[in-house]
Amino acid sequence: MNKISDELRQTLIEAALTARQRAYIPYSRFPVGAAVVADDGTVFSGCNVENASFGLTNCAERTAVFTAIAAGRSRFLALAVATEGGYSPCGACRQVLAEFCDDLPILIVDTGLAGQVDELSLADLLPRRFARRQSDGR
Picture 1 (cartoon, rainbow, N blue to C red):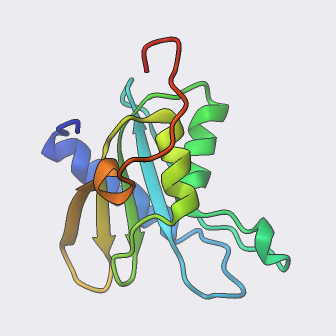
Picture 2 (picture 1 turned 90 degrees about the horizontal axis):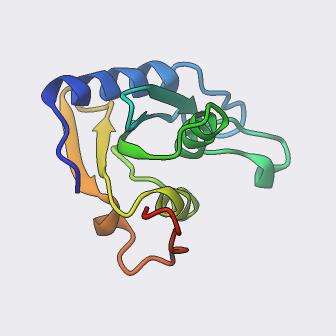
Picture 3 (picture 1 turned 120 degrees about the vertical axis):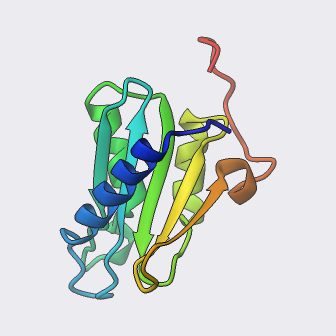
């Protein structure tokens, strides 16, 4: 698992908290914000976006990763997720992360408890994950 600086850690947390405020959540009323940092230091954020056809809803974590991919970044150093209750990424988000990362730090921010941040790794959350082996060494 990568080690990230305290400064980068705080930047990711703030980006996730800001993204959470932009969530489109007319059905669940449960805002989630996420931020991922690419290996070049660029931070990409995302929020959950719900839809009346619930299967079309997109999680904050995948929104952040897909935004980074659309910008040409596919190597990540860390992810932060902000929810009330400190929930970790869902299974679909974990598998999307595994597509691009062997492992990475995941900061779980509980907005209901000021200053509460747990740090886990993708390997902790998705052990023995299914992954396509990359020919470019990733």
